[in-house]
View: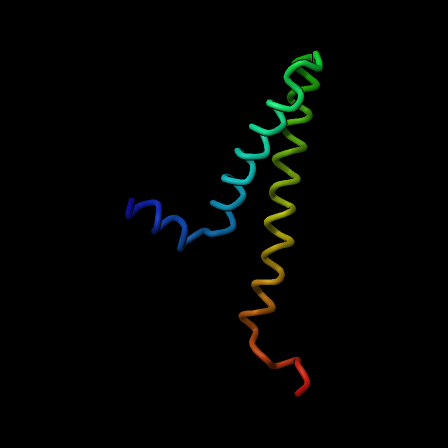
Length: 76
């Protein structure tokens, strides 16, 4: 458990990306299980899902960077 906490504190965006990717892939597989995709189509969808999860975490981290910057750019 301590190793997970340590990993979270060292690389929060990477851990968030992994967790979000896994969740999104599970939802993708559950939703499209009866569609009849070929293995290449599944691979492309899963790769796109992983990239989308990474992009989402990256965009969310922009707001965290703004919060840590403080009140330097804000007017009273």
